[in-house]
Length: 344
Ligand code: NAP
Ligand code: GDD
Image 1: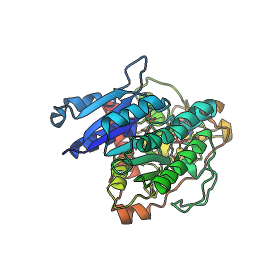
Image 2: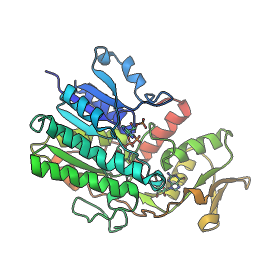
Image 3: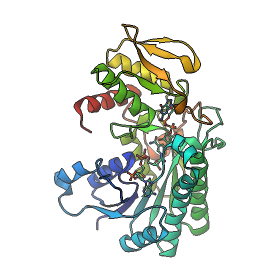
Image 4: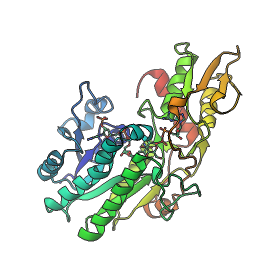
């Protein structure tokens, strides 16, 4: 019998790669999509064209992680072997603008799924993956960060994810649910949302190169992130649910780069010659003709910043036998070539 997976957040970056990954492993994949005024399945539509997805192996349902009834009903009807909770308001800066909604979706969303597993008496059948984040480390700048590093979240998003992290552990301990937290560092891809900094930089510099845009506006150029490829990271999610016992794992590339250096790498790959001038909010990059092509703008600074993220993923590398296939250079090349070809 084929295994059944249920993915909350299937229309997002990770959800789409995870769906592809599980379909290749012969799962029947159920996914939850939200009703929206314009079509939100753009990251999935190509899957239906692939030969191994001919029969009804990818099934989408309407639902919402903030709606207990839909969550409970879907879990009751599908009785999945594995549930992946990737659904979230996932933008850190937006969480300062919509803190209550972020808490409802990102914190209580995990609780709703766990409680539905229990309510439907699926504790022995259904394994649960919770999409945790390196944002949990927040203001704790002691790097590298691993499973034993103290959490100090620095945004409504981080605080909501802290609740989800602990409720996952609580249900594992109280009800013996096979529930795991992945503490994933930043991961990107051609399917990355356009308002996250990597995709924003790549799309803007490609347009500037093609003379379709004049200036890219950014916020803090000096925060450092450990950026990997989403394709590698969804493999780790699945591996966590295939272990003998449920545990939590940090997933990271173990390499760190600043936003400014990320810009420099992209510019170099696109053969855009830039020179940096000024400091703080007045820092900018000019091109060979002296035109400003990158500038800072206050609207992209956050009320509180996470400056320094670098993961220590030795536990995952040892126990899951996981390691990333993409390095930063390959990730950026993949994103640039997809952007220039207009295809992902
Ligand atoms: P993403 O592209 O923003 O996808 C988020 C998904 O959640 C989308 O499918 C979105 O639906 C869905 N969603 C949002 N609110 C929902 C709601 N109320 N009910 C149901 N679905 C809802 O994020 P991602 O980068 O794939 O990340 C996946 C998960 O991993 C998120 O939980 C994120 O917080 C976490 N995470 C991400 C990273 C990273 O670097 N990418 C690192 C650590 C943890 P729509 O398509 O309709 O918006
Ligand atoms: N988005 C954005 N836009 N970020 C900018 C900009 C800008 O114009 N300019 C500078 N930054 C800085 C942010 O202040 C932050 O320090 C860094 O670039 C990365 O920002 P994002 O790409 O928005 O990602 P994030 O690190 O805040 O959050 C992502 O990674 C988390 C894991 O650490 C998201 O995917 C979260 O969902 C995820 O949990």
